[in-house]
Amino acid sequence: MSEADTDLMELAKRRGFFFQASEAYGGVAGFYVYGPQGATLKSNVEDAWRDRYVTREGHMEIDAPTVMPEPVFEASGHLDTFDDMIVECPSCGEPHRADHLVEGATDIADAEALPIPDVEALIADHDIACPACGEPLAGVDVTDFNLMFETAIGPGSSQAGYLRPETAQGIFVEFSRLKEYARNQLPFGVAQVGRAYRNEISPRRGLIRVREFTQAELEHFVDPEADEPPLERVADVEVPLYSASAQDGDGGIETMTVGEAVERNVVTSDWVAFYLGLSKQFYERIGVDMDRFRYRQHLPGELAHYASDCWDAEAEIDGNWIEITGFAYRGDYDLSKHAKYADADFTVFQQYDDPVTVERAVVDPDMSVLGPEFGGAAGDVAAELDRMAAAGEGDFDADPIPVTVDGETYDVPGDAVDHRVEEVTEAGEHVTPHVVEPSFGVDRLVATVLDHALRTDEVDGEQRSYLALPPEMAPTTVGVFPLMTKDGMDERAKDLASTLRQTGLSVVYDDSGAIGRRYRRQDEVGTPYGVTVDYETLEEDTVTLRERDSTDQVRLPVADLAAAIANLRTGGDLREWGDPVE
Image (spheres, rainbow, N blue to C red):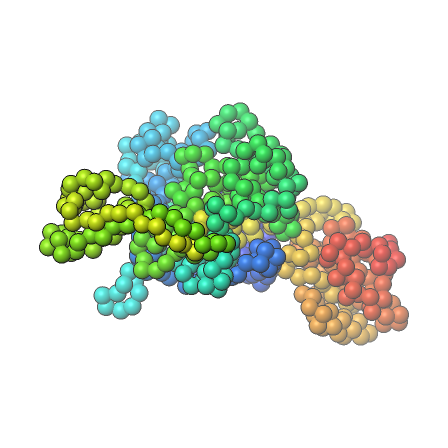
């Protein structure tokens, strides 16, 4: 862990942002507790996300269970594909992410995309050893390790279940009901903020790679033939793009507007481009440093099985680029897979403006022939014949007609299938929506905001550490301090703190130690404003209001205080509210 990481971890633990869970029992890697400051900061980030992606975009939000039955993940592909490469030291038994070891010893940036034999060869070629004990790992098998936590649902011969590795599946499996709440009208979006679980091989770097984390995901369901994003809203937003072609060559980050990125086909999906522009505004709002931020396009080898194009929002932390959001155009992969595995309708009926008459191929198989011929598979064979006719597949003039179901081919007698073309009048069609997904890692956002906010300077000849958090994100908005705990100043300060709380502000009262130290304590946790009650307060009903970043102070009437803080939180000027205090 670097010195910068250590400084942030020390601050986080000492000031109550986050710390390792179960420390009384030795701690468990990959699990963290958010303390009083951190829980509020995390909540503020989540509230800003909801405001941006739910309230302002008119989407809906759900809260699905974190445990789901095994068939959900069989359908989604997680049982077969949700793996990391693991190599276990033969000497000390310590498991390691094989791709991470390769990345640390070579110039390869994305070893995860390589096949296992290539990773094994790289370990041998570069004499990579176990980080724990130094034992050479050449010749040790690299294997796939499924990251899902398995559990049992119910007693006895329980149903197998898993803790969800992403919140998205809780939205997809409920699509049939959710589309009703959207009045069966596309497009519509469903959001969810909640916990997810991945049994990481090597949890590390605090909140960056953990085993229990919070995701904020939006699944935006669209008609691929009819729905277009409102690109005009973000066309002029400048975005720093690190394209796949730049990564393959000697290129770097190129800043361009969203409109230019679409016009030049740098971002191939208009919907993804829209969310890149929309999200940049969100990152700026919560305090991500735009000089340490980029959008990186996935290389062909690292594209998820469901994605036709995918970009990651990445933030630089201590010289490393960390993924904080994934933007994917998932197509109809998820809904089509669940439609195949589940007994539910994952389409939306889109009504035409006027009914249309079309020619439609239909089949009428003779089940008195198919039943004795194919037994229990007869129904599946008939269903596949119907699908083939609708899709214009197969040769229905052949005898027999080959039909493949679950990998097995059945020869259907030609005279047992009546195949014809009929004219039908249709009022609309069933559409399987495509999905656009921005998926945010909330814990990584919190870590990024903290890292990018950490500052040091010198005030009155002393070194100061402070968090330059946006006021909207700060766990506490204002600290109220009596200059001294005598002559009624402390009681007046307590009353003032209570009054400010009634206006909805988050307020801390502190009368411990010298006033300068109290300022420093609040600066260190990012409190943007400080109010000091002194003798002038008792005599003239005025206070000093201090701004964290500049340390400037003004004198203003108590009656104006709440309005002044509210104004400053939205970008107001401190000097407009009172006379400067030297």
